[in-house]
Image (cartoon, rainbow, N blue to C red; front, top):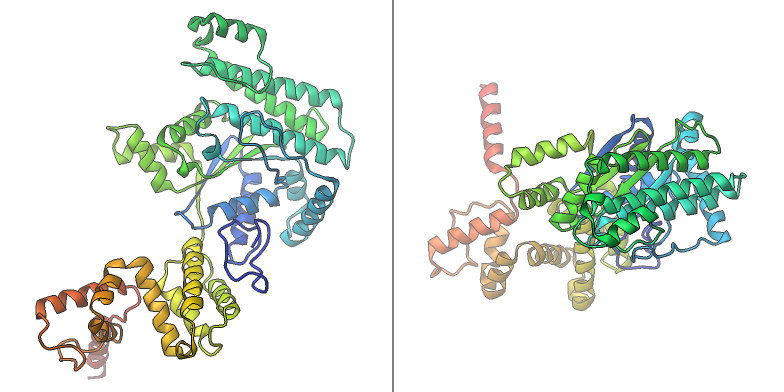
Length: 473
């Protein structure tokens, strides 16, 4: 399964954890809706796309990025590294993909036109979290990806060379201005530094660098640079409908200082009338980072901070159960699980596991690896296969239960009784009588908790039966 494709079960038996543009999990519509939202909001605007680890945030963001015409370039992790050049064949392939996506979307001509006027930037702060100031690598990304977008547009229309040079010059001055916001140690820049700022830095004169108006100066420079970039790409000096859309992913993987620095930069300096920010975040992890960074602030203050930063939050939807089951069935068939049990196994797995794409893939890969090790004729029965799924679930997610069964396999009948919702008050012939009853009750409780989300609620059933009997009488 490539980053832009789908899992090919005929060629691969194990699913990697790369993001996808396709819709194998039934979440593609969320990415398309996010793209449309980015076109319809009134900038400045910041959207938070929230979801737990492994929920599919990156795939949703990447789908929106591609839908809006973002170009998937690979860039050096070193500040100032050159972007990977796209070949002529790459441009033709991307154009074909863009045309196909336009046909799928069923958007109005106005929306397609608006998407074509956007400059979309993909930025991963986790790759740059050791930078002295998060604004510098972000601006470098804008500069590099603007260059690729401009080259793309030159294939289909003539652009004013002077307009492009002027836009780049403004962006360089904007990067220069970041120096006045970064105090403590010099920053090695990849673009030219204006002579006045260079001289002030050499003289180490903080008064020349930290004026009260520095933040406002940077904000205005950034806004002018964005307008110049967008007007150049649109081929007009009056492209008010165009916008810069910046997708930021993996923020919750960064250290606390980097998280706060970037959020503060967005809030204080980058909120201009042409900018839309789309951040994929685990809001609980980010709130935790804020709490650790600002010791003494309570949870309410941190939550209010995020609410003020994001004008809207969009939760990543759960994958569709049928899509998950179809994916599981295809992989089990590849590994030659008995054909008469694969659908039941898929239902078992989706019932047992949290509907988290990363966890499902990880469990499925692990299960298939164990199957290949243990596979023999005796294993190829529906009962043994379902036992394998249950044991793999316990091994990965309930280690204490798994260790109990490893050390005392004679308790397996008791686990079966718990899963079958048998009457636990009656003695079981498979359980030795000399077992301590208190220990046995505790073991049953551990077993029940491990499977509580899939066990039948017999108490609720009895209540329903009782009420039905009262109605009948």
